Length: 312
Image 1 (cartoon, one colour):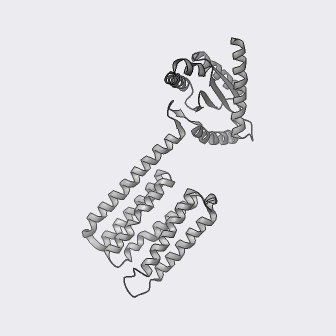
Image 2 (cartoon, helix red, strand yellow; image 1 turned 180 degrees about the vertical axis):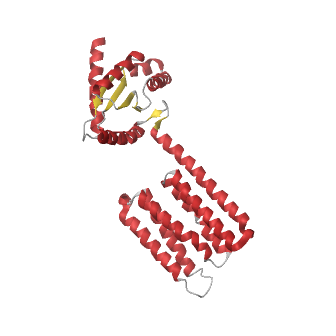
Image 3 (tube, one colour; image 1 turned 180 degrees about the horizontal axis):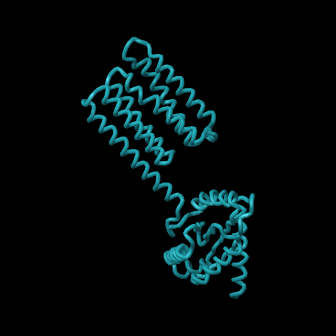
């Protein structure tokens, strides 16, 4: 079953199923009076249905659907502060804010997480103060500051993780994963607009000799200086990335193969040392990103062999 789920679907289902348990316990074991609580029973059933539905969807469960469910949770949980019998139980409802904001920050853009979490907390504070007065203000302030601060810290941690996962730490450029994430939208834009899109696949010549003769630290400096030079001599709209080892790619926006080839020759005149080879491919309508990259890679290998024969 785990193979059919995503982290988003599992976390959402867990959130709602935990809500079902919470509502069921408050309607039975922790009931504060003998009066029945059909509202809690309805909430428990709704949470079970929502959680089960999420698990049934599995990998088809989208972020948009998750956002709608989180808005629903806000609309149900926050107003319940008006129906609880006392301040203690109302604060128990407020504690649900912590898993709520952590879920939002982890799975959604920060602007969306902030919108819902700040709306939750502001509405909750207004309802609590209107019902229980200033005597709960200190606890509300502690709850709000702690929850929102935790959300901001997790958000910053998530942003750092995301940046680390899509950038190359040695050369401070995009890595292969980051490049592939940007390539998809670029291909889509080219397909819609009809503008050309080309790729240069770059590879340093005889880089292994640098490592063997001078050590890996010297090799790292060569890679860093080369990456910095290409980045400095490229257009701002182009996408430069390191694929690994001594292989780099440069995605040239709104440039056909002839223009990209000219750009590659210009770069080689501007950055003659270390020597490097490159191949150029222009995106073909309907072509997969993998094939687009592979064509440039093969042309780079052909040029590398020709340059090697010319030197020998």
